[in-house]
Image (cartoon, rainbow, N blue to C red; front, side):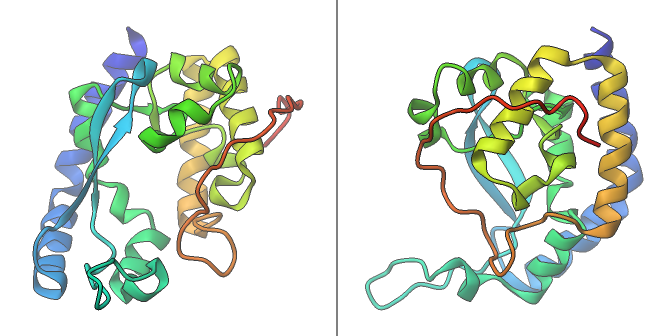
Length: 207
C-alpha cells in the first residue's frame, strides 16, 4: 500500500514538473517524424497480464521494397539517440505508473513472446509489478546478459522493500546523467531473448 501511494504521488508530481518537456518533445517529434508521437507496445504486467506501455518514438517507420521495416540502426534518428541517452523516451511511462500498470521500481516489462521461454525461476519476476527501473537496471541495464538480468530481477522479488526502492531510484538518477548501460556496445537495440539455462548467482552486494 505504501508503494502504491508513493507511485501515485510521485508520478503525479513528475508529470506536472515534466509537462513542458513532454509538450516540447511531442512537438519536435511531430515535426521531425510525424505521427505517431508515441511508441505503443503490449507488454506483460503483474502475473503476466498484458498492458500497453508508452514511450516517445525514437525510430522512423522506413521500410524496404518488400514492405519490411529496415534494421533498427538504419531507422534510429539523431533525436532518438538523444532521447534514449538521457532516458527522455521513458517519460510517458509515468502515465502507466499513475494507472497502476507499472511501478517506479520492479523488473522491466519485456516482450509478451518471452513468457513461454522463461524457466520457472525466471518467471518469478512476474510475481511483482514491473517497473520503470529496477535492480537489474542499476547493475548494468542493457550492458549485461539476459541471465544476469534475471538473476537481479529474482533477487529483487525476494528482497523488495520500500527502502530498497528508494535506493534504486537514487542510483538510477545518477546513471541517467552518466548515460550508462543504455544499449550493448555498438548496437542500438538489445538482442532478443531466446531462452537460457538459469544459474542463480549471489547479487546481494551489487552496488
